[in-house]
Length: 171
Image (cartoon, rainbow, N blue to C red; front, side):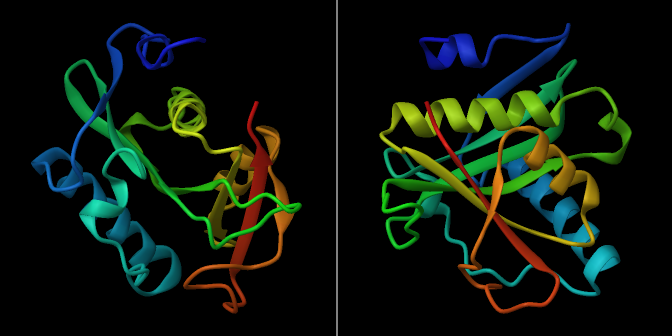
């Protein structure tokens, strides 16, 4: 794909990915849902400090995925020059990947991840990195099957026993 528009092209009827500020009501609703999922899975909210400007172009982006006009998924990335992978510091970090329970099993997470990778690469990133956790085995399976490999811990949860970090070269 050569353009962000092509990357956002529907892969199934009714699916579209829209860039929105993290403060948009649909984005806020989905971020709160993912926070509640963290409470169920880990016993508490994700305490990673995040500000809306972390996801403002050109240093980041936030997306909402809509299925038949209903917000059902989020994904975002932000530049992380402080995370070096194989000598490369042109990194972008995946954040807030989420698909609502009612939309799971439809293959929406993979195209959202591909969209994040594409838009980060267009913004100059050469490596995608991410943090996830052992209580999210489906996320780990998605990342591993998409070519992500384990890397040493970084970020807010770098020393947490349940945290796992991954990276993938772009392009």
